[in-house]
Length: 100
Image (cartoon, rainbow, N blue to C red; front, side):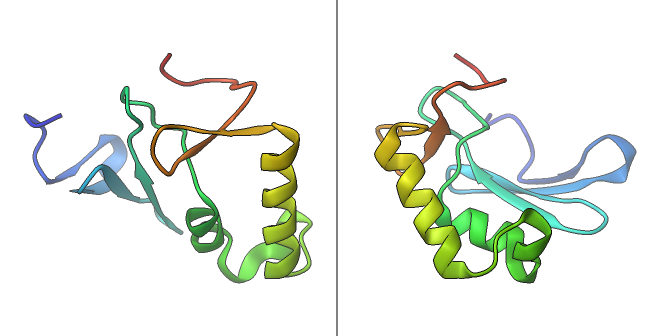
């Protein structure tokens, strides 16, 4: 990924900015920030990123509060629905997509 410019434009004028281990993509209505996984995966996440993505729109996702989001995330980890990589990212146990 070193041959990709640090700042650029994707298809349809979508801007991006590389940083550290990841990238921030600026969609028309929201910015999405993600880190790449140990093997180039792009579908990892953590609670901090979910909070930023959801912002003040938790109720649009059927969640009433930040505390409820925290509890749901911890329960998904506890039950094994989410698995942690060697780093700080989590993945769905049954991933519908991703680089394997």
